[in-house]
Length: 46
Image (cartoon, rainbow, N blue to C red; front, side):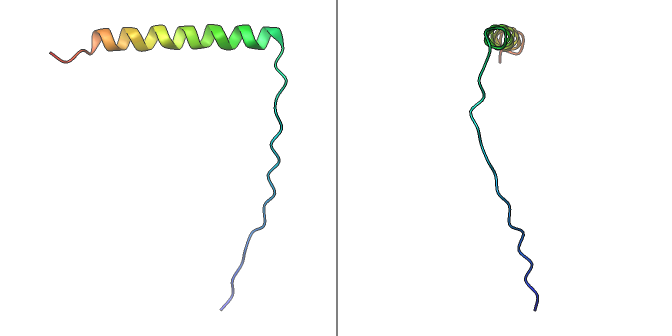
């Protein structure tokens, strides 16, 4: 019986966000929230 094990090392580093990245993420979240609200208003159960 052969047992093959894959050893994997994962390194996680915190990303430094620039001001432009923060603004872009805020705009993206705002658009996603607007789309979600629009979907809820269209697909309301009757």
